[in-house]
Image 1 (cartoon, rainbow, N blue to C red):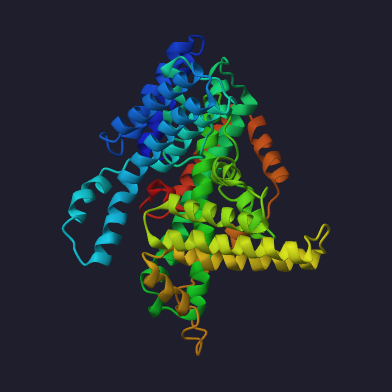
Image 2: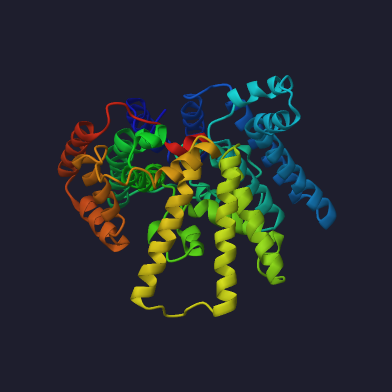
Length: 473
């Protein structure tokens, strides 16, 4: 069930009516959320919901177990059970076939690969997000940063909550579970801002991301040799913009939808393409993943508390595993490795020459441009179907410069791309003012504006709606 589908437009108001109808009854409203979330999740494939419920049950039980044990060694063993269980199932369903094929390719045999291939077909949607959310619960309980929830229903709401269950943001138990205990409230301002947030997400996805994909990005990556160098370069930039608008659109809709039920989800993006270095980029891009990797992987590895060489090793491990989190493919390993190298070189530069405390406007602009170019070029590896295809796209940037002809760059594509890139420069204050103005409109005016926007989106959007890119992660 896609956020931008007719089914969801029917599903959401029905769920809201039931939920707010039971707002005064704590257990009833939680049951409504769980049932609705399971229906939402099973809309793709009913079978994997069994795995989702199993992971929820195990992590809930581990949390209760930890509450009854005080010995440090025993507590470490118990939380390790949750981590191993989560990562084993993630590896089994998401990576077993890839690992097997890699071994098989190296060994020159193929029969054993048939054993794991059916597991890939049963891969639950959003399993990587689900696993990280479950681990955040048991690890926070182990660290005594969160009290375990005696009620399985509470953990089920956290693990299955439909706005974020498929593609994030990665929600931490310590942020979400305390909200369950409070009676949900929503006023006209919060509701209006939530609807505006959802509308912005729809525009990002259907007007910008899908349009750029259908009219330029998919064509360039399908056959880079058939395009001029300038078309390939603009196509890669367009993919960088498409990915941001697609993923941030999902986050916008998820955050806005959660707000309609009285829940606050943390922001997942902060204008990442305005970053002046890769460290800043990772603080702004997919913030829920970056902070998760920092707090649950990089810092436990030692972070930057040990020697400089150890700090660089910790950076590389974190970024490679962050790449692998995205998918079972060597290109994601290469993508994570390249980002790790970039971060390590940045850190080494600061150690050698010092980190500028008040860089000039010109220096900041140059660093921002360099960072953007690096991110764009690494997106090739992220988007290509394999490493050889990535190499072909990369080298195609230098082809066919004898002519400046670029038939693929139609006025509509260029207008869409430039408008999308320009939108990245609007400040958060501007967005909040517009959202506030929308929320203050009379209800009839808001309804008129929403319906008019929907009709406009239908006119501009691609004929066939596309799933969100991060669904496959």
